[in-house]
Image (cartoon, rainbow, N blue to C red):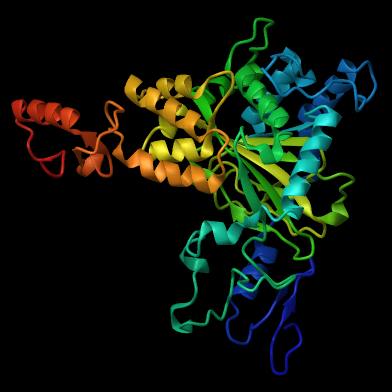
Length: 451
């Protein structure tokens, strides 16, 4: 595909090639524009930021281990009930540095986030998931229209997409929008029990950032972070990811706004990673259209990267020449997690309550009725230990008949319209709503048909 008679092909410095330019130059023009407009990070600013925040954290880490790097067996990973304060970064000074960086820089880096034993177990588990064929292509999972109209097949191309921005055939090193492979893992997923140590640590960090610390870690450096994290009681299932090096995998620039999350947490699992391996997570300036690089972050093992899941943090994954493994978690407010006509299905299929809350407690805190909260807890217990396909089949069979108002299961009822479109109401709740609306003279909105 690279060398073709009368064909035009471009090879980028990362070793990625763009073929078929003689038919459609869109991909080449995109890359040329990127090269022409992207401005490098101000090295002095980056060094000062790292010294003030991230190197100070590492100094604190060394102090906590008596001036030496923490030993691989200095602390056993914990998988049972969460013990707050069990990590070096959970002290007031560490929390202030992390919160201060989130406030000032919109992101924070915590190296040595887990005990070495726990990090090694996570890395082995994610490697096994990839080697065992549990991961699927990110492009296949997201669908053909998930990246906007610009990257859609050209209307004039007919059945043949001349651009092939998705690299449909999976050719090695051919240009693609992104080349990751992924699998989603709930807290009870037996395929990767080692990840529980990670999610427990992430839950502890979030909870500690959310509350005022009795030891006094409430300084001005917190900069509103506690308030911004307020109400977060859910996180999505962990997304374990591999970016294969053979295909020079990457992920083009984007923001995490579409997930409805507040905070993104990425944990890296790659031993002995160097600049030459590529795969940096590149953060741009805070303006959505900014072309100034803010930082290039190497995906080194046991590094946690936190950033706001908002337009403040546009980012991309640079092309990698080695297999690059990560685990990503998105944290959400309970009030947002329980919205929408299909919230119960979505909640039970791909969300976990942030510890120490149970699912029942988290749903209650989202403002749902007690009936809905109890129903969610019962369904979660029913799904426990079941495979992904079985879980989805059960949810599709059981959730549609659950009343959005009281939480009871009933085949007799009606679907809402207008702002209630897609919601199911049992006969009792529908009748009560209808009587109230008629008394108030509001007959024009509500339930679709008399059951």
